Length: 111
Image (cartoon, rainbow, N blue to C red; front, side, top):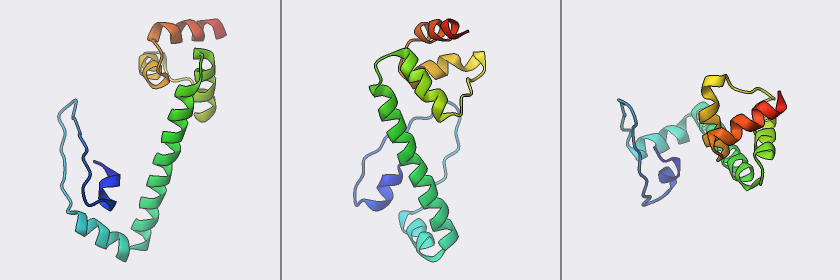
């Protein structure tokens, strides 16, 4: 649930399931031992963490952009110029930190 908690004595994190969910518990010591003893697992774990850092940096930079157009351009660049299906535009607006209406206007302007 919270990757940072693996390397902390105490780490406070909330998780909220918005739909029926199964959660598995793995003791911290077990995972740390596996990471120490399994180089392939350690590689995949570090790859995952690096990708999470990249995503966090991108999101921070994206939200610092002032216009809907700039945010959409940045998002499209990050996602190889692929606009999601029309049914997913509301979710895209949330990711961009803009209203759905503002996003729809920007997409219409580009067409």
